[in-house]
Length: 550
Ligand code: F6P
Image 1 (cartoon, rainbow, N blue to C red):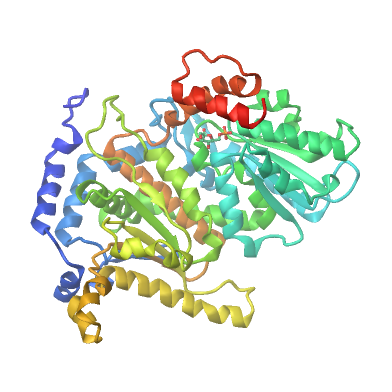
Image 2 (image 1 turned 135 degrees about the horizontal axis):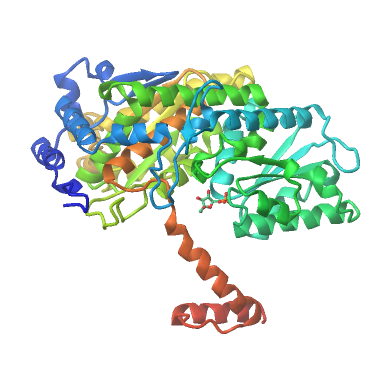
């Protein structure tokens, strides 16, 4: 029993029914499921917004789906979802509302936090961002010497970096090509060095993105960027006002740093870092693609928000994707989940999802304060096809692990490609379709033999198949489609956290490393004694100092 008198998740009838069903399914074969139901390839599909979602290549039957939906009902996923949309403080360990959905609400929506409608403030900031982005894009906003801004450098880390960096990459074809964008996150000085080494400070705008404005990596890089700027512009402190803006919830810290709060774009504590790139944190992206495209992206988010909020369980795509993840994570012992986009522009998408998913659901303590007795979030990984095919797909096809995967692809190549490069798109997509086919259906020993393969090689050339995949297909990679994809994964992560009874919106697990780094640093720089430092770290620090000649 939980402290609240509820039966623990793995003891509920719905969970045990799923475990029993899993046993009964035994070695269910996708080949057999498809042979038994010729309509499966269209029946197990859903459309939402611009997305066509095929979940037919999963190790499931109608009964599996029914039992999974019963689990969602028993764990009150929809109740928690409605509480989130209403602005209740469902992030209990931080006592905060979780309202990234308000960031894309229409102007006339009413969403209250502590009795105050937050929507007007959201749109006021969006309007200020649009005004500023317009001025940078047109050249009206100039640097300290009067030169036009040509370079925009976003300094941030985690959610204050991954979102805008990913989205900039995804929407490159929509960006102002006469501006250069760089994203600096790592406290390794090499990151900032490489980002600015070929830039003219007089033409460079720094956007310091930090929800808390206390994150050591960001503050250190921003301080070094200011030094770089001032030394390039003759040391006049007044230059900072034309070359630095801040994105934060913490006006006090922004002004302590020396950035005029008139140059600050605000967001709120009910926006989690990893859910924030559609807030002020997206300013670099808005400068890149322009306010109209940014709003199109927000509209895309909203399509999925509305769908998640209102669609029945049978056709609710984020719910379905969350449940499928639970099915493999908890009933097949799958340890990881691959996201494999067949678009070069989505090269940073999986890295973005890693924070979204793993920082949200990498928890072993439940919302009731007790240790969970079931698996929670998977390891999320992947890179764009076809590169992965020539690297790690071998393990997915013939390794010993079950790795459920999402394949994301587009019917149209990006418009600005030459005709010759556009023609490559069919080859890319042929790979996309071939891979999920090979993963699902494999190749039997008899099929291998039929190709005249010598008997001793038959086991090596056999593909067992039965590797589950979801295929997400859209016509074109637009700002709206990006918003739809991100919202889809946000809500999928939500569903899983709700079922596993964890707080998907805190991140206490990142704290300890930060504290220890602070303690160890003086040992590196001054050789200071760190009380209680373990023997391994003591020796490593000593070796480090020796190697640095200290
Ligand atoms: O890694 C922890 C974390 O707090 C993330 O959740 C967050 O996105 C990142 O650090 C950056 O935080 P901030 O925006 O406050 O600098």
